[in-house]
Image (cartoon, rainbow, N blue to C red):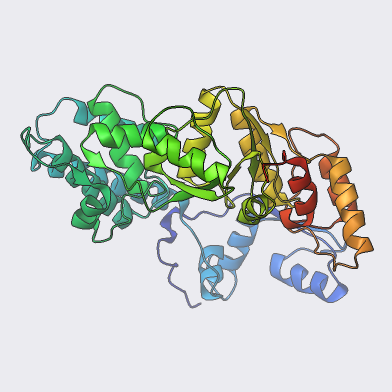
Length: 403
């Protein structure tokens, strides 16, 4: 009787448990009977894998179940071996990190051990393949070494893009949405006995404290009608633009210009609403998220909310729009602005009367935190209504401006 070699790594693969086959045809029952050495008479068959393995070894094939499955080209995973390999790779990752720290400007700094322990405990690198995790951790060590070394009081601050280019080869290597940025910020927080920042202002403050200058001019937030208090030239310029019914794109440098606390600020999702408000010479104040609400948008809204301004929000009537609305309304305790189920029904009826082609909703339905009926109504009508469909209603709702 011939024999076949075990599949690679099969030592830890042992057949156990059972499988249940249903709907077996007469021909399949006959084949199972021959395979198992016992008669299978029903359409449902329970097969113990250990018995099947023993049966295969006793036949002419002289192969166990694992070898047969491997010969059929089906993948087998030795979970115990994979777990052992993973443990070894993780151990090698942290050993290499400790060696890199010992050879860097971070050597001897008390907070570094706690930083590594935090990363291990929280699994910050757990979803990355070992090679990628090792590379990112070594880049984080290099960045922190540059920032925490004694560069002298006269040293110029780093630009974040320049620092990223120096370490990663790309100016976007330390952007807020990167793993590397999160690793570095955890290290900076640990070095200063603080907590990792949870929002954009906290991240900016921590970068600045480490003498890293964030990019403050490339991202902007479209606004209209903001009339900040104060006598500075920025405040005067914004009031003048509001007087002339002109929109303004604010950068991160300009977010400290705040209107009086009794101002009602409307928030929209689409820049077309800002444009239409300027064309109609509206008198209300408006901030646009331009879709998903970038860092500069959230920082402006954070500033306005902290100053006690009242906020109202309108966005798209589709599932991504509801997700963004939930985010903004919850974060700022904002009121919905023509965003309840009745508004949706009226807009849908108006679009149908105009003969507009219906755009079906796509994605997973979401409950609206401000209206328990909205999701059900949207699901029933199944039409996506973007903010432009409500443009006339929104502009009419803003306070009229001067001629």
